[in-house]
Length: 104
DNA sequence: ACTATGACTCCCA
DNA sequence: GTGGGAGCCATAG
Image (cartoon, rainbow, N blue to C red; front, side):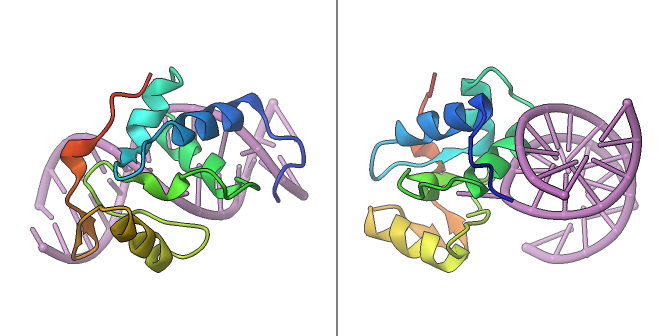
């Protein structure tokens, strides 16, 4: 169930996601590292999944190997949005892995 | 406190 | 390239 009152962890994750500029992408691991929890990649995904706003560029977050990962709105939609922002996707993999940000 | 779940990641066959 | 297994973390019930 989505928490009515998000925890600090979630706020931190969303905040980092919001810092991702358009046309670029980041990975769960990088975000996790940005919040000082490099092993919390999974928890990061969870936070985004519970994201009640859906206004954060959570669709710019991909897996470490460049795969799309998942998306609450549908992985398909995520790919479409990324493509619209200029992110190249091939065979379900993001080709912009070298555009990863240095968050934090 | 414990268990179950999940938008993850790494290692090995 | 594909698939299975184990590890790690936060949240919900």
